[in-house]
Length: 159
Image (cartoon, rainbow, N blue to C red; front, side, top):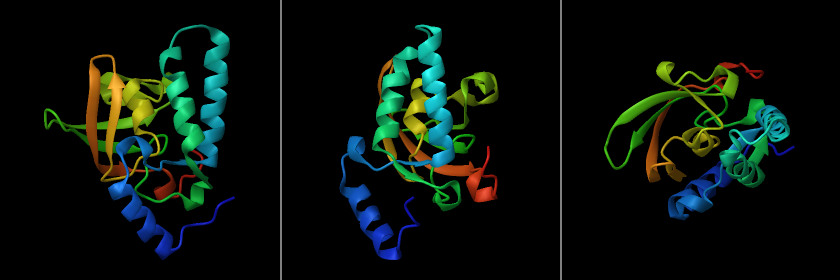
């Protein structure tokens, strides 16, 4: 497993993130989330064509992610069950969502599925990051304004 980054690594990563094109930014994922998301992907593939549209994108995100133990994930990273505040860079509208597994998704309650376009886009990004993602209505850009709750930062390593 990869240990926590040193101060020098964080400084270097911060510089790289500010200079890197959005599509090349490093994302983070916990071993626990990776395990559960991999099982989810396998299960969805086995059941049929529904929700397959974003499976490939989710797999790409997981493949490029820096994987760390839940105890070592930075507190400003969006993980599963995180409550996040994002801003649409086109409209300026701010939104708050909880990133959840499909069975827990309730859009009217602000709980979005990891298998939705926005859910797939959010996983692993950090506060301050700009996310560009193709959604059914076209290309969208959001800025991660804050994380109101991250399970791991609250000592909940199994959510």
